[in-house]
Image (cartoon, rainbow, N blue to C red; front, side):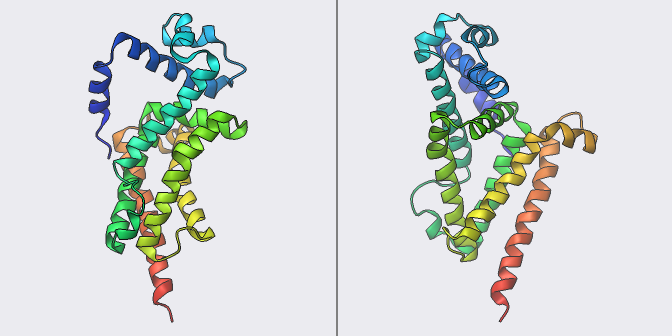
Length: 233
């Protein structure tokens, strides 16, 4: 599972006061825009949630619109860094992998993303913000799609081709990759229902590991089925 919480905390401890304020405003924006929507959120509420001066929103972002764009860029940077730790995003990297290497990459991505999406509190803010944008698209969704959704999904499709031999841009491959991602996101969207049904007080490292084991088994089953199809005359 992911072990970068300490690194994240150490990095934040080195931030200047202004950088701390900027990060606090972004996190407040993620939370409030996700919960109440852009129009339903005031700059005063954001400043209060961030424990910051209301003028700091204009100072750091030029206003509420700039803060929304910064929230989108924060998501792109964070998810890109997390996915990149397991998924080489360099062009054509997936094409050089052997099937066994590609399968290992897929498993590592699944484990890394489950640890983040299911267990990291900040993932809840990100998912709510993105769901709001998907329901009511703005330029922020364009930034997230172009900066994170599309490149990560395309790279996973390339790795899938290396693992299975199925064309990266086929409908089947693209939809399969969406299902792999979707099963992970469910555990964040429906975390309250999952915790109640499982008798969990929270989804932490132990619970995320249990989710990863099942998700990895699902991936193994899909890959095995694809291999059997290829072997069938």
